[in-house]
Image 1 (cartoon, one colour):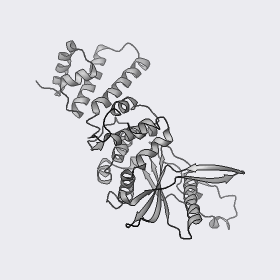
Image 2 (cartoon, rainbow, N blue to C red):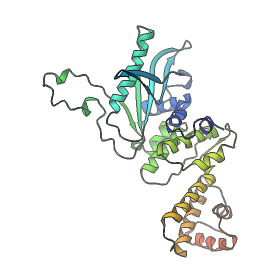
Image 3 (cartoon, one colour):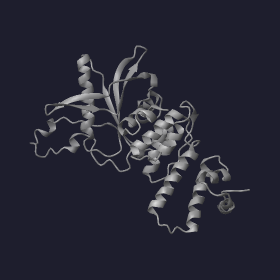
Image 4 (cartoon, rainbow, N blue to C red):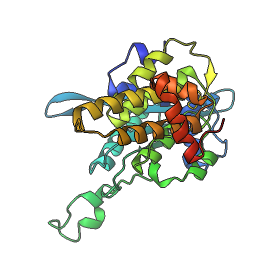
Length: 325
């Protein structure tokens, strides 16, 4: 079972960090956003570093923790040339520039305790949310300076989030060009669901371990438990097994179908007509047949359609051109 499945299940903050903490995925995020998919940063160039820091306020010591951070190194001697952090955001935050400034300042402060020579600190903010980021991405843009004498205003130092990336700004074509790791599927998920669409994953090859981490992060960032049943089933497999989200789609679809049935039972009137039921079931069948290699009988078995009703659904599929003898 994956690390995410065992030690941190239910901890939203920790789950968000585990997927990106893998060097190959962290490198993929940097290459995708900063270098437009060009493979400049290699996983072996990254080294783990401390993500926690402390500050004193009101006479008390407080802790602050980055989502994930790595040291960027060069040469065989692993000379550090930068510290790079990634912050995940699902909602706009007016105070994000101040938060990033605190993280970066803490990293520089730590360097000063170790050496007189500083290396640069870069923080990427990756925004997964549906709504537009309505706040300014610089510190002074969110602070009222009007009460200050005009002579003082230009002297106030600013701080800007320059590495800000909104997932929904990317097209499907850009995704395929930019990302190669499981992060591709994470971005794909939010692009589709933010647009109000059903999630239809691409056939990207991934290990079971990465799929589990991906599903955990999709749960955490979306604030749901939509994929718990699928996660539990996949957790029984060899974590090194390579597959795709489309190959595990029958389990994925079953989770969605079970959830839809539950929501229908709780929210929809009991006066659902036979015609409506047949249409919904037919739509599920078409969805499964178009995204898997299952036969019509296999798809109907997955949906639990009684054998006596299957000829009727085959006739419905024939009428739509989705099934032939």
